[in-house]
Structure formats: structure tokens, C-alpha cells
Image (tube, rainbow, N blue to C red; front, side, top):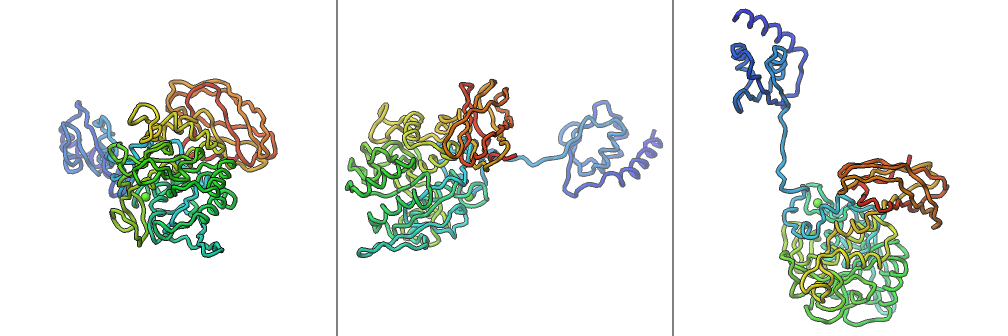
Length: 482
Ligand SMILES: [Ca+2]
């Protein structure tokens, strides 16, 4: 028996040495059969490594495993693997500080969409410090300075105060880049419109000009205004009405007096006024309590990006990062949500967005609407789910012969049916297209291709699913032109 074993081994090793090259860091777990000839096994004692359990070994010697396998001694073997603690879905350094993301159901929302770069969000504020390594989605904007009867515009949107940079980080800091914090909608494009250099020197005229520019110059779908004033000025009301008439969603902070005093633009009926809650979900003492509060969002000690140098009051975490407080930082949560919704449903109107918030926010405080919490705490996933039965194709090139996009059935056990789709050409005309029947199980996805018979499809193509349940685009499935 010993002689036979020795011969076998000799042959195996000669053969194996040439056949099984492997990486130095590969390691295997191997299970030896209960029925194995354990007198043979002793010859592998140098190769098998430590025993994890009875007959279960680790080894980096794949040749030895192959030899054992050829001798019929291996029940199974598999490469060792690195496991991950389920403590954080993202690798951003300060993700664990970001209580605000779980509270508003950001992670599930990001599985649907993290934002499209075609969606532009104007931040009318103190500018943005784009030297912050987490702010990679900031496009060129404008800086307004008013003197006597002159308003000067230049491109220097550098933020030395810190406020606009913190607002922007909540909206779109780069997520999962091993750096800083996780933004909510890091796929969108942010437009900085700078009207402040300190906390209280923004002029009404600059604000009004910036609102018109956000709409007409930049084509923004969302405007974030983490500022306001307690007087209702006609010029501001007109600018807000203009944005509303163009389908632009304006989000504004309710104010930080903690009183019932109305601030504008938050108090306008077409603006989403936002109050602040702390990490316990309780309305902040400083948060305005009045009819301007449509919803609430996290606002106390919210981690975000800051400027390299800054002069505002904050609680610094590290260079470029801090915890910031105020309804100023609640508003960008809602602006980020608006940008996600617009990425998902590009033609969403301000009225539709506000109605959705009314129906999907988590009621807090007194039952139903109240002036502390408005309609409650925003829920980003519920917000997207509200619009879920429309599958949106965007950025389609004109003249394409067909388009396709992955969709998945998130929750329903089965989703099936023949679907009539509505197709919007760039001129707004609408045509029906039939697509083939689909049948997909919950949690699975399917690629849907749509023939296009109209020459110009440059704007928006939508699928409207008739009552078949909850369907969503895959998070990273941009429409593909075939
Ligand atoms: Ca980051």
C-alpha cells in the first residue's frame, strides 16, 4: 500500500506542476470525503494546511487538491473569498455619520435612480467650492454683485462662506468614491448661482435675476433657495411664478426663527417650503412653524461638504467636511429628491411633485397636516414609487430605429401583460406604440425594446403601464439607442 501511494503521488506531482499554475494569493477550502483512504491523506499533510473542521482544510496548493480529486478523495473544493460586513453600503469616509440618508429612505431610492446629468439643479446661494474632492458634478454658474443701479455678472462662483458648498454636498456629493460623504443625487448637474458672500448680504435683485437665469439661461428643472426674507416682494413673486409657469420645481427653506413668521419664497403656494427635523425625527426648535411648511427633512447636524476655507458657523468633521444645521440644509434634501423624480419623470410638474409629497411623506406630529411638520417627513423611495408606473426613456437621439431599456419588477410576484405605450416626440405629439407582452417575476429584470417609427424622438419617450403593478427602470440603465 505504501509503495502504491508513493508512485501515485510522484505521477500526480509531475503532472500537476505543469498544469495548474495559480496566483500566489489564491487559497482554497477543501472537503475530504468521509470515505477517503486516510492512509493516502497523510501523504498530503504538508499540502493541505490547517484543518477548519473534521475533514475540512484550507490550502493554497491547488495541485494537491487536483491530485486528491483525481484519487476520488475530494467531496468539494472552492476558492476562499473575502466577505463584507453589512455595515455600510457605501465606502464614503463619513457615511456612518449620515443619519439623514436612512431617515429619508435614500438608499432604496438610489436603487431606482441616482439622478441624470440632464437634470440641472440651481443652487442660489454663496457659490460652491469646487476644490472639494466630493463635488464633481458642479457645472459653471454665475456670480451676481449689485452696486447702485448696476448688477455685475461674472463666473467666479467660489464659495468662501461655506453655506452653498454645504447645500450642494447634500444634493450631489459623489457617492461611493472612498471620499467624504454620500450625496443623494450624485448623477445630476448642479448649477451654482452665487448671490451671497456672507450670511446676510444677498440682494433681492440678485435673487430675482438668478431665478430667471436658472430657468432661461441654464434650463434648470429644480431651484434650491436656502434663504428668504419676511417681506412679500412683487418682483420675487413674479420670478417664482415665472419658474412655476415653466414647470420648474422651486424648493425653499422655511426659515430659522422658530416662529410663525412667513418667509419668502418658501411661503408662496407654488414653492415647496421645508422645515427641519433632528436625528430623532423631532421638529427643530429653530424651524419655522407656519403654513409655508409643506414637508420636513433632516436639518440638525447634517454631515456635508464645506469649503476649504469658510466663515459660517458649523461643526467641522475634517478638512472639507462638517455637520451643519438649519432649514437651509433641509431644503436640499427636497431639492435632491426633486432632481431624482425629474430624472425618472422629466416632465413632472411642480403641482404633481407637491401632491406626491403630500401623499407619500410620513406624517409626524399632529395627525394630518400641521404647521410644524407640514405633511411630514419626506420618503425618497415612496416618492419615486409614486410615479412608478411610467417608465421614462430620455436622451434619445433623433432618427433612432429603436430604443431599449432594462426594467425590473421590484415587488410584484408576477408582472405581465401586453402594454400600450405612449411615445412623445420632441414636438409634443403623441403616438401609440405596441410592444410585446412581458412577464417578469418580482426582483427580476427584462430588456424592453421599442421600435420607433417617428423620425424625431429627441426629447422624451415614455412607457405607460396599465395597471400591472410596480415597475421601475434599473438604477444605471440609461436608455440605449440601438
Ligand atoms: Ca463621497
